Amino acid sequence: MKVVHLSTHDVRGGAAAAAWRLHRALRDQGIDSRMVVRTRHGDDPHVAATDEGGIAAWHEEIITPWLRRHGPEDLPWFTVGALDLPLETHPWIIEADVLHLHWVSEWLSAGAVQRLASLGKPMVWTFHDLWPVTGGVHYAGTNEPQGDAWQRGSTLPEPLRAISRREFDRKHTAWADLPIHVASPSQWLGSVVKSSAIGSRWSVQTIANGIDTNVFQPGDRASARARWGIPAEATVLLFGCAALADRRKGFAPLQEALRSAPREGVSLVLFGGDAVSLDYPHQLVGSVRDPAAMASLYQAADAFLSPALEDNLPTTVIESLACGTPVIGFATGGVPDLVDDGRTGLLAPCGDVPDLAACLQRFMTDAALRSSLADAACSADKSRFSLQTHASKTIEMYRACTAPAAEHPLPEMAQGPLPFTLLNEEMPWLQAAAVDAVLQARQREQKLRDKLQATKSKLDKAKAPTPPTTKDKPWWKFGT
Image (cartoon, rainbow, N blue to C red; front, side, top):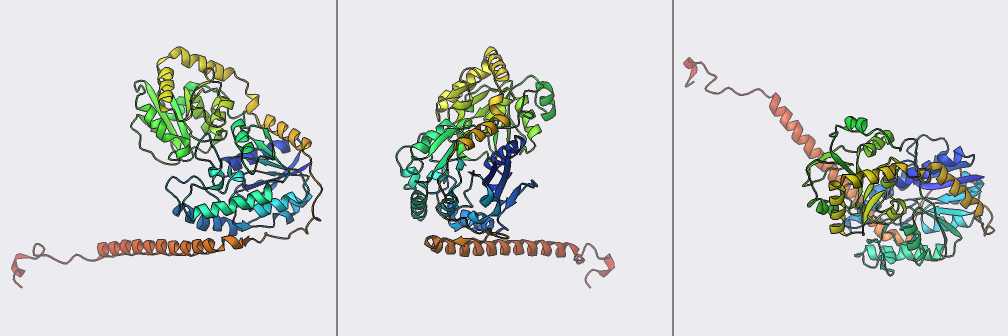
C-alpha cells in the first residue's frame, strides 16, 4: 500500500510533527508511506517539498501579517486558501493508493483539494483543528460552538468577514459532496465537524494521535528534579505551551485560579517560548525542544496544568499521562478523552475558574489525593498513547475506505517545483497585502539604517580626540 501524507510542514509545529510521527510509524509497519509538504524542515528522504519558498513567503510574509493587522487583537488563527497549486500532478501523489491530508492550511486551496479528490483515490483527512469546515478560523472561539456564525465568519470585522464568506462558499461548493474520511483525534472535534455545514456528510472516526512512549514514560522523580534545579520536597505544578500568551491555552484563567491557591511548599514551573508576568512564585525554563528533556520535566512534576479554553487533543496532556503525571485543568475539547476525572486527574468545567481553583486547592492540600492520582496515572495503560496503536488504527481505516472512480484521466506528472497562482476573486486584497508588505519592509529597513547610523555616530564620537580644556593647560599658558 502506497500512502502519501499532505501537510504544510513536516516536523515544525504540533500538527506537522504528529503527521510525521504517524508517517514514520506506518513505515515501521511495512507501509510505503511518504510525505509531500509545502516546506521541508527535516532530512527524511521520504519527504518531498513542492515549494521553493514562493507560497511560504506569500503566506508568512504577506497574507497572514495583513490579515492579523486587519483583525481584532484577539483574532483566532485565520488562514485563507487564496493561492492555487496543481498538487494533483505531483509524481508521488499520482502513484499513491491513499491520500492522507493533515494540516494543509497556508498551502492548499479549496480547488486544489477538490482536484486531489477527482483522482479517485481514497482520501483520509486528519483534522487538527476546525479550519476545513470554516471560512478561515481554526477554532470557533468557544468550546461549545452553536449555530453557523463561527463557520462563516459572520462576527469578524470587515474586510475579514467578506474574505471568510467567500472562502466558506468555495469550500462548501467544492468539498461538501466529496467522499472524505475524517480521522478526528478527539470525540469533541468529530462531533463539531458532524454538526457543521461542510462536514455533515463526511464519515468521521476517532483516532487519537500517538507519541513515542519509549521516551515519554514514568521515570525517577528525584533525578528529574535535580536536572532542572527543582526543590526535591516541593509540590511541583507544570504548565507550558509554544506560546504562553495564546488566549486558547488558558494562561489568563490559570493566573486567576492561582490567586487563591496555596503558595508554601509549591513550585510552579513554566516552559514555553515567551516570558509572562505572573503574581505567583514560579520558575521559567524557556522553550524545551528535546523530547527526552521534555519527558524529564513531566517526570519532575506532581501534576501538569491544562487550563486550555479551546483545544483538540493536547499533545502535552498525552505526554504528561504517558509519563505517569496526573493532569489538572478544564474539561476542554478532547481532554476528557484522556483524563479520567478523579482518577488520573482533576477536571473543572471549561472556563469555570472557581472550580479550577478548587481543584488546585484540593490537590495541593491533600497528600493522599496526590498519591492516588499519581498511582493511577502510572499504572494506566500506556499503549493507547503509542505510535504503534495510532498506526494500526489508521491502517484499518485505510483498508475500510472505498473510493469512487476517477472523474477525469490522471494528469501528466509535473517536473520540478509546482507553479502556483493567486485566486482572481481574492486579487484586490492580495495586491493590497503585497504593497503593504513592501512598505512594511521599507520601514523596517529605514529603522535599521537609522540605528546603524546612530551607532556609527557614537563610535566616531568615541574615537575622536578630546579637545583640551583649561584644566589640561599648563599654568603659564592660561590666557593665551
